[in-house]
Length: 280
Image (cartoon, rainbow, N blue to C red; front, side):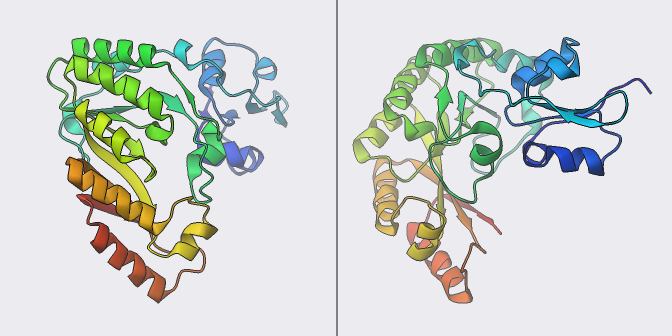
């Protein structure tokens, strides 16, 4: 009876009041970026003194504290890798486009792109890409290599758009090369040939890229910020350099018709990425 129950995540970030009303069993929900909110909860700080919290007081009334600012300094965020090493059996997790076993983790949060469909920047991370410094990331990778040895075949940087800061991506890639590590990351189809080549030369094996649609009007409506020809050139460059691409597409975006779905299918066939996923 004395156990307290709370929720975190995208749904409660957007609908904290409704979540509490719909689920009387909940004592609290943590809004938006919740790392330090969870830390203060674990330390036993009173609910009314914790920013970013919506909670039920002793009278059963739902209250909310002021919003918490986004994490400003990512270098002070602890590494997840020792926790993975202690608690995560990496051999039990498979994903079709990564070499097995792999480790996936974040070096920052937030994405400046304005894609209307994308969940995380609009609910948790915001539109400013806040990151650990290359030096901090490389230290973590040294730690990861020491912890896991040669057991990990691929390291996946799961930041929304790891390549958005190209200089940082290149600097981290040089550290990966020195450590002899194979890696992959999320990217947009904006990355130029020279940057792709440098990343490839420094151990990049695969990029996860959202192409979304083969119809330019739909891409414009969802504020994707890419042209079909840009995607074609990007894929041609990746193919020339031997970089694998996992392409992601969406069916059912605004103004979608049977004809535009068929355009997307033809576009996916033309791009011919190594693997694809399709969201509906």
